[in-house]
Amino acid sequence: MFDLPALEDAARLVHGVFPPTPQYAWPLLAARSGAEVWVKHENHTPTGAFKVRGGLVYLDRLKRERPATPGIVSATRGNHGQSLAFAGARAGVPVTVVVPRGNSTEKNAAMRAQGARLVEHGADFDAAREEAMRLAAEGGLEFAPSFAPDLVRGVATYALELFRGAPPLDALYVPVGLGSGICGCIMARDLLGLRTEIIGVQSTGAPAYALSLAAGHVVTTPTAVTHADGMATRVPDPAAFEMIRRGASRIVTVTDDEVAAAIRAYWQDTHNLAEGAGAAPLAALLQERERMRGRRVATILCGGNIDLDLFRDWVLA
Image: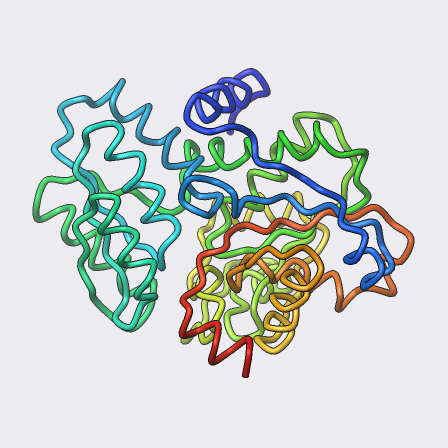
């Protein structure tokens, strides 16, 4: 998909906007899990999530190669839309974002604050994606997918920072929504010639990639029911699935209760607030604590954008 110089170019572009996010080894998480735990803090980006890296790289190419594009439209549950809105505002490109009805009110507000036009449509992400594609065709706009080479190259910059900033890692847990994050980690690991085991994490209520990996081919699900909205997808991207199939060791599924416990653990042990997808890697590590005991492990805290009402009802209940 890209080589190491291209990844380093993307990192320079991203770092021209904000500095590398930190990766810390947290002693209380080590005591809790039995492993040495490094956390990559993607909750510390300007949008509170890792996706902004992909948005910056995607809009950079768009402005250079297709400067006459009148605007872009995409679908999201929040963080992808924020990334495009943030990058689109910097590039002077109008952004329309389609979200499912009942989407996070605070993520919706953040996208509007970044300058995006927000459209609510459908019951879930995949229905919103179909509407976004229709709006693009109808209005002569560019449809910006949630998985594309420039998006993967952009988000892979966090993995480049992690692999170069932490000691050699035995394993890395990564949440899986549509797949850009885990594919970026796979690419960065392979380009650096490392042997780190990469483990995907999905919700038991939205296990499309886990089912696909088990079956050896793309499997869709009729629903994606989880409070961890960043992982609530029903239809795997075929290109992402192939990268995951070749480069990930397995996919662990976690319950919403396990994710809520991991959000509480992050707050207690690091005083960082994680959204559902951001806490899922820690939930998977805690589920596999006996398997990982004594090893050096990283978890991606991919975002901290959780609604206050959801936090109260789900995490503090």
